[in-house]
Amino acid sequence: MNSPLVSASWLAQRNNNPQLIILDASSESNISGKKPEFENCVIQGARHFDLKNKFSDGSAPFPNTMPSAEQFQKEARNLGINTESIIVVYDNLGLYNSPRVWWMLKAMGHQHVSVLDGGLSAWVNEGNPTSENHATDFGHGNFTASFNARAIVAMDKVKANISSKEFMLIDARSKGRFEGTAHEPREGLSSGHVQGSCNLPFQDVLENGFMKSEEELRAIFDKLTLGDKPLVFSCGSGLTACITLLAAELVLPNPLAMYDGSWTEWATLQETLIER
Image (tube, rainbow, N blue to C red; front, top):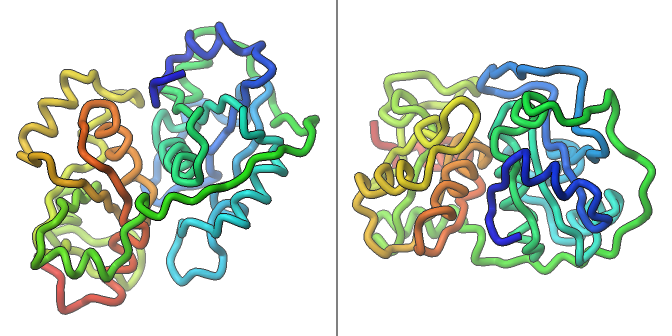
């Protein structure tokens, strides 16, 4: 499995592989107000990846913060994930939470992981088997986390980059939020953007819950004239930025990383460095 993105038919053909683990990264709600096409059903055999409660740092001041390697390893083992596991992640909104989980697993050293293109809807609409409940009958895993520090860029480096311009910061929020003409969904948070960053709303790389073609993605990134600079992705809280990061992974050779604190951290702590 070399591609970070796989189809429902690809998954269906390999669903009997004992090394395959399907992770459901769906959440009960989301800040974008999106609604799933199918509710109260999961891919048969899928295990629940609880992004909010088990795979985020609950002690951090900002949402969706990457947990420690120790916490991630513990929870991954509780899901029965092994070092040799082949993982496919999906969610019930097409592509929403699942790219975040893909990125987290990669950042923690697991290479055999992909995202299901089109998510639960793609699986159901092709007539594949579903269940009402997640799988719980599996053993304890042996996954060992090996965190790649280059996967995350901290706020101080984002601040320094305003002058150094060592990397390009790509903001996945909507144009209105980026330009400061629309309100942020989180109460009390001002809109705007980090000086020198560019805007690529995550919706622009998607079409009906699927990732756009590689040809379309190349055209989108070409318009940003990124060159060979490293790319760092940001959004409201580090979630939807992973959708644009996944799109870049498919078509660009540039080094890729996440500003995990994203706009929530920046607007909270760097009010004097906000452009509108």
